[in-house]
Amino acid sequence: MKRILSIALLLAGAALLSGCPKKHNVIEPPSAGSQVPGSSSGDSASTSGRGLNGDASTQGADGMGGAYTTGPLSKKVIYFDFDKSEIRPEFAETVTAHARNLTSHPNLKIKLEGNTDERGTREYNIGLGERRAQAVRRAMMLQGVAESQLTTVSFGAERPAVEGDDEAAWSQNRRVELVYAP
Amino acid sequence: MNKRFSCLTALGFLLFCMRSQAELVVEITKGQADAIPIAIVPFSSPEAAAASFDVAQLVSDDLARSGRFKTTDRKDMIEQPHTGAAISFDDWRRLSNDYMVVGQMTPLAPDRFNISFELYNVLTRQRLLGYQISANKPGLRLASHQVADMVFEKILGIRGAFATRIAYISIVGTVPHRNYRLIVADADGENPRVVMQSNEPLMSPSWSPDGQSLAYVSFEGRLPSVYVQLLKSGERQRVSARAGVNQAPAWSPDGKKLALTLSTRDGNLDIYVMDIATQTLTRITDDPGIDTEPQWSKDGQNIYFTSDRAGGPQIYRVGIQNGDKPRRLTFQGSYNARARLSPDESQMAFVTQEDGGYRIATLDLRGRGDVQVLTKGHFDVSPSFAPNGAEIIYASRDRGRGVLALVSADGRVQERLVSSEGELQEPAWAPF
Image 1 (cartoon, each protein chain N blue to C red):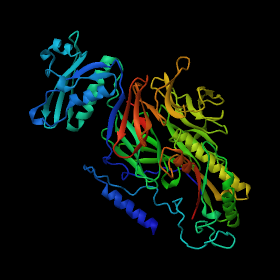
Image 2 (image 1 turned 30 degrees about the vertical axis):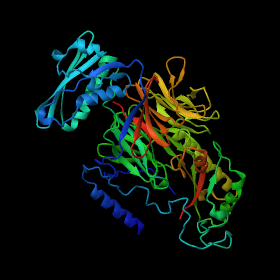
Image 3 (image 1 turned 135 degrees about the horizontal axis):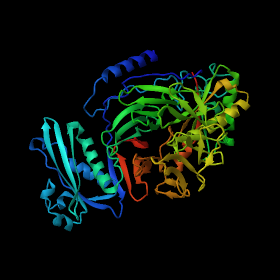
């Protein structure tokens, strides 16, 4: 349904925009990339309201992690120190919880999205974001998660969680987000 | 998921004559102390076209914005001659003008005009230049920039770059609902046109050598791919959507290849050269560090790039022939990245970390490698040379907002372009 809707919007947009409007109105075409299912990270609302406690072995048959509102599986962001890609000890539990979730549900796949704060050059920051995502990936593989369940993506500094030119904002942006694929 | 790169040609709903709301206002923050005083006298214009274009004002604005000229205010002009014969040179000399331009605009046809102008040396009374351009109404802005180019070149001996374009990224809205736009505008910020927009990030616009296309990175679908877009038609071609990183496209001087950053499964970023037509890849770096931000030398034989193989990011140059070893170019400080070459390859602009902030610097490629830091901000990144090598446009932050700024290649003139809407970043100056 979503796919049909997106194609219809695309065609409608193309029809609207076939001329050259001379006015200053900005006509917003349907933006590319907004129709990917399950693409919003950091938005832990999922299709089910099950699994209010965090015990992966007894709850949530889909094991998505998105169903959990408490416990380590509800935590899906890992934060990092400046210029570092080491996983801080306080996030070890989160990594382990998701690793166990993945090993007990081998059909599950997860995307590890690496991010940096805004400082420095944009393309080098893509590299740093990738390094962070890879650190989480390696930690999960060490705990038995299959390589095929893990994908890394780096957004560098391009998708901040918080805007601002200070450490309060920067510390919120140096992160890896764990996004389960549907 | 098996990622295959494919040629997608998606027409038109992304590119069309859509005017952006953003207006760029130029503020000169530091002018050149010995700027040349020049007066651009309002041109005569036909009464019927009284509301038509003020050529002299645009020429004057262009020259003032370069920071190398000090332009005379109209209210200080004691007379407004339109030909050399009508100039009272002694009066203009008393106003301390070294040069002056006079001109006329006459109608050739409905909506078509002839612009004729003369440039005079006020002291010697010598006519240095006389020229005519004809243009239709929509072409008057470009014609005025061309007049400014001719005056600039005649006096300074440097080709003018007023009639050129810039591309940049504009971000509107606040997280998490940001809209990213790739915009092409005149070099003075006028006529902004959105050529691509997305709810996912757009990055790294790069002009083809013929100025007809832009390569860029798009995260549509929430994964990075490199696209090439032909500006005239809006036709897009996805040229790299390999698994992992697809970033930092840089055109070879012959326009046939792109240098790119790709990654292995284990996240090792390296530089490759891709033939656009055949999609064949040649690996250029092979090193466990982050290797990215490639730029070609003018002869197409070398690639400059950023690598942190020595611990922190530094700039290297490597020949694209097999077996050439990269040579490190930057040695001052712990962070040097994102090289961009001047058109004559005499200088390299880059980003350096100094006093905890990121600044634009140049390195002398012809001499002993002297480094000059040109800017004083904390977040000055993404330098790009004008095609005449006289100025560098870059991204900066001012009072919490992303802005574009200009600095002359010798650092003496500084200006800022502020958007009335959105955050601006990643400017790229088009070739001539």
